[in-house]
Length: 378
Image (tube, rainbow, N blue to C red; front, side):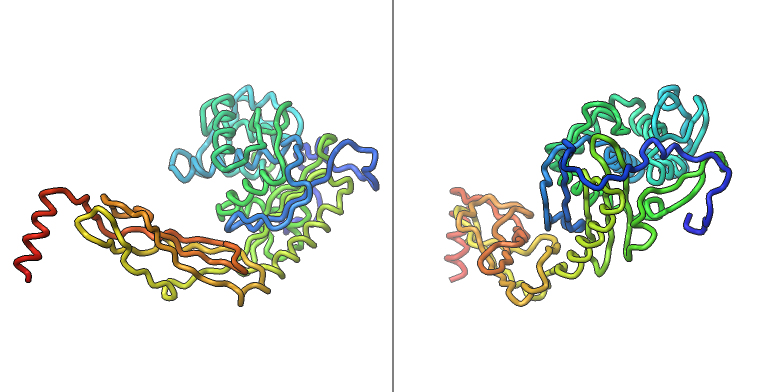
């Protein structure tokens, strides 16, 4: 909690295992440098420098652990007040930890604090066992969800990210952080500077200096290892925009924070979210071939938003495209066209036009019925 002004004599989380090392030059290092800036609401990649370079996942894997936890909480199988009994496996974890004892009971709330503030490996294992029952099934789920999210360069081998074989990229981490940023319940955890768990036995101190001063900051994680140097995953929200900055392989502890501030400031200053107005979109009936009706009524699917440079706002053009190959039968919800938004003929966003009624296929009986109806009507 930010109200703490000095360290107490309480037991600290073993953050020293991940403490940053100062370096002025990484010219002799084999560790690459990578950064990515993404708009998190839409998942739009804004800037990238070597964003697909592979790195050990290390503590960034814990973001996937938290993501799967939040999905379990959404489904109702777990809650922040759920009590978890610590296994021998969780107790055996090394590195950053809160020293959970085998059989010790602790709430999900405190485990989340231990992960978000302290990068605790034992807490990550305890969470994984609470979600799936065992680490192996949880790790399989981590990889399944990573693939579903499009994190195609990421492989997880355990919930902590510290085992061998955990691999990811800045682009993939940005995708994950964007998804995780939608869970507002986690913001108080990610933005906590100091706190305690286990009835005050263990004190946690965040290594993410961004949470102390950056306007709109919502998280997420800072860490160090010899294999990936100083790393930062930062998220912030202003004026409906969410900036996600991922920096990997930074040799200097403080420069990662300076770089993140600079990149996120540029993002907030240069971009905006463009939300089309439904009242500006008029959809006509769409032609149907081979149906009992010559047309089908249509409308637009859910209107979303897209990211655009402020300088391009006056250049946005809307074009309505109706598919010319719509053939009966047509069901409600079938796509029959698109509303396209473009800048200088470059497509930036599209909304599907969908059928709002069913149209059956024309057959002999329906053709005769239609003919008779038209004859009597005449």
